[in-house]
Amino acid sequence: MDINAAADLWHLEEIAPVADTPGRLVYRARTPDGRSVVAKLLKPRGMEELAGMDYLAWRHGHGAVSLIARRDNACLLEDAGLLTLEDFRTSHGEAAATEVFAKVLAELHAPSPHSPPPGLTPLARHFRGLTERAAPAHPDHACDLVWAAALARDLLASQKPVIPLHGDLHHENIISKEGTIWRAIDPHGLIGDPAYDAANFFGNPLGRPDITCDTDRILAIALVTAQVIGCSESKILQYAACHAALSASWSIDDPVSEEDVKDAQDRLDFLKVVRDLLSSEVTC
Image 1 (cartoon, rainbow, N blue to C red):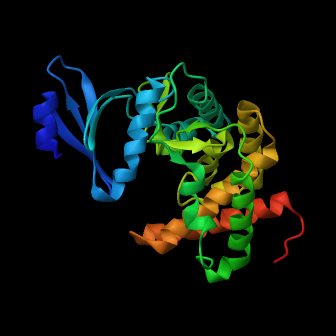
Image 2 (cartoon, helix red, strand yellow):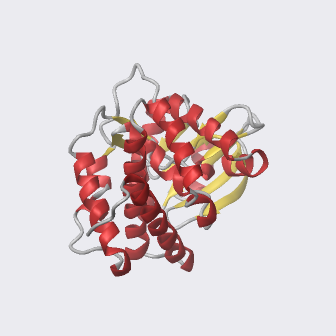
């Protein structure tokens, strides 16, 4: 479905483009009653996000934007605002942003009276790009990547509990209208260990290794998120390290831009920092 078909289906007006990524097209529009909404259309490369639509339908607006309607590759969403958590972090600081993240994370992980949708992606499948590699993605970081792959296999073999996950929580995917009510957007729709939902938060803001590799910040985020999830800080850091390795592998295998190459390096640098935090002695 293209935007013209979506406009006809949902009677959209005042349509304006918001984003054009390799995986999706996003538009802001209005319904006939004047309500602001967001239309998201998945491209072939982004069809794995169909599981994210299932996840939004399951959350029913609790912690995440409400799914108003969906058809094929398209969905119509609540317009939750323009203020990102990164905007908030810039103006209010790390501690305040982490506090908001923790509240959203808790709301997303709150029990639901509904059964999890069957289309969610198991965390073990999500991690195949790291755990089933024939060789490390980056020869200069082979030792760290082999370590992360082995750690990921151990974590995936002992997931407890197993719950639906957003799967892509970070500063740009948490938004608000006025800095009061915050909602998560663009879920991947995974299912697995809740500790993984904190993993991507560590790696943002993108392109700022001076921030993301700061050990005090890393430990502070681990402390807060471990309390929300109810696990050890070590487990939070382990999933964060494994996600960094997975994300780097994706960027190296299928780079879209020079920014992807730079992001891979930043993720690998973060991986090394966290590995050192977890163990004072690094061996291959």
